[in-house]
Length: 372
Ligand SMILES: NC(=[NH2+])NCCC[C@H](N)C(=O)O
Image 1: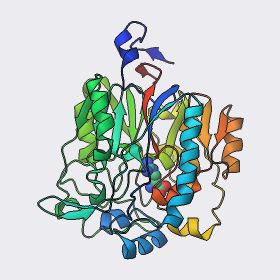
Image 2: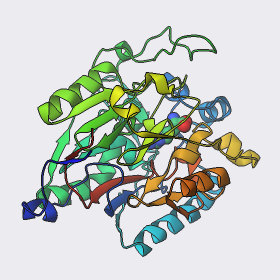
Image 3: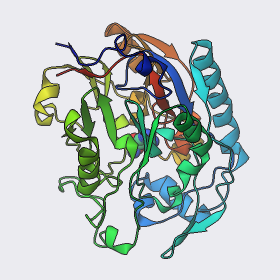
Image 4: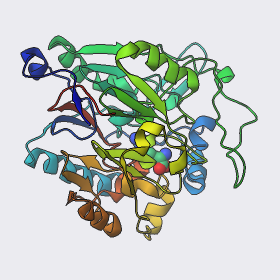
């Protein structure tokens, strides 16, 4: 049952709003897409290495701070260019962050680091209705990532958007549990973060109107979730979803809504009995196994686990952008009544994700509603 809370027709200002996105599926009008220029291999801080697959973590700790080699950038850049062209051909306005050299060193009074890249706007910026929030990120190499989006953010601000930054975390040793190890099979899920200060990545949340869903992770602690809850106030409810992923970072390979009443889950990480009661009323669509990645280069360099087949972008309630490598996923989406639009994107995994990660919806045509 969908209850209309606000009506855009009654409020012409909200129709003209530069930032307006309440969920993951309303018709997409404007989106930010990340960049690869200037990308540098992320640092080997424990909060980075605990989140990435073993092989990539070993290679990365040797090469941290160097620019990504051309052999990795070029194929990913070709895919990215096609993805941007595809979005534009669908009539969607595409905005891009500035190209910056992420090899540059920066610091706070307590530490210094080189950068990473701005491939994944989904992680550092959270759009809730007409507000855009810079999130308090925990990877030191991502501390200033939102600066490359500042020209866009200032433009949205000038045109009336609400622009907020969560308190900048200190990221000192007190935030990290020195005893932490990635839980093995049978061990309970644990996290590297303490509650020293609030931290969260935007990509640990997804939005369904007045209800937001979050997974705690190695980049989002309970204080971070509480900060957002208080910041948003009574108009929103935040529900925590339990994930069995031993290296949790970002919700969009674990569970993602495809439309009102439709939720896609990763059967390895989600125990449906443990879902928040409100979601149990929705159709639960179980993601098929991803097709294996056989190219050794893609296998070694991926910063992600295998479930990027789920990391899709909804153009609207029907059309969904998905990698054609994942044939079973394409077929499943069709069987669920959706129209998959294929777009090759496997090389982007070395930079942190796929379609959902690489984008940030700025405007979707729709209003704030209550879906539960
Ligand atoms: N928004 C993102 N950057 N998502 C990427 C999710 C990656 C996730 N940690 C995995 O390995 O599957």
